Image (cartoon, rainbow, N blue to C red; front, side):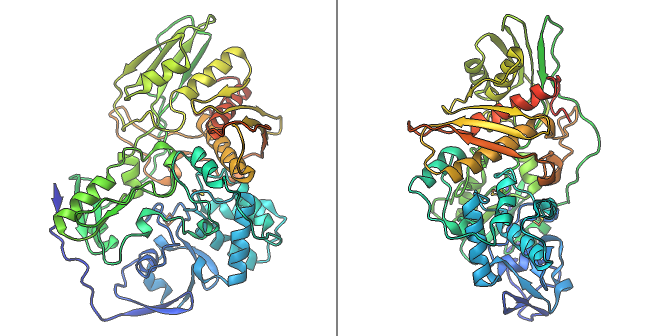
Length: 523
Ligand code: FES
Ligand code: FES
């Protein structure tokens, strides 16, 4: 059921009560209760992204206010009355070109959703005179940001590269490599770094109605503006929990030599599910730029946009909030597994379409039992789900990582040094574009390390999620991420996905380095 009780909410008083300067131009604001983010996006500044509003935790909406970085989603526009707002579009042409070059040179921007906000943050750092050799200063500045793609290191590299970066000409195979690694078409054009990757919610026609989900009724509420739709949907700010939750599936007693229990984890993509549609048309996909680590494969936003556009005879944008993604989006299926010395064993996994086949293909000696666990929806499409845990268990049994091959065909091995740094070797056919491949591999290494050591989602015995903010997922921050060195093995064979194997190899190396504790995250 949907509600149109609020239409038309787009009618706005012609009286403009305050003005701000945005990238050198005066912008009149109709509604003083709006956030700066809402005003900027309504003014067409789509480089300013919404990854978590109004949580203020992802940094994607960061802009400069009188030259200082500020998170716009928690900034009431009345607080910046008469102030000078600079988005990435308003940064001096020569400087923005150097940022574009720096991010292209280092692979510091993949999907690019986080990058415009990070560039604004780095501009603030630059204005304070920070040295471009100071990697720690850059990592500290990134504390206000989230990036799920790059593993941070290429972003810090971009800070270092800024003074000398020159224009990068992408190799012909760059897009192919990005698509192989991301699992979905992803632009590798240089303007991705300034937010022009072509995200669904950025391309919606001006004047499109906006739909938001009322979580108490599961009804979509349609209004003229995002702010109004959220207000009418009665969105209540989600929180994170300080409660401790154990992995939800128990292993029966047995003669296991190795056991592993995992918990719910969030894919953690930053661009929340979004789609739009014209009446009688086909919806624009939530996967326009990036694969979301398998998290949007069965997203309903496209179908909802089409239905609402037909119902209202008007273009409609459908956009999940961060809490909607947490509550409705699929998670990695938790499991509990035990392996005997002869390689036989048992895997008990949260009931998930297709997961038993994935596990059986990866670990033929193990019996697979699906169990019903109260909790969020799970998906076998989440990156590495099932087979990665089997590869890690197998490494634990052998006592070494060895070369791990992913279902996508790439192979990798990894080692954790005494200082915590991680060395990775990857083989995945012709690299096509080494910068892009390296960036994806570092991002995958960061994800594999986090999966083992820090990532989880608090879900209680009734299946209710208690971690609803983007900072709740345990994603490693830049200052917590060790140095990751990627060696790309020479190979001129058929290019295949390499980063999934890297994620598994780093997960195995991290687990072995910690002595193979039973429960993830190990802490
Ligand atoms: S959208 Fe503002 S911090 Fe995430
Ligand atoms: S490049 Fe940072 S979230 Fe995708």
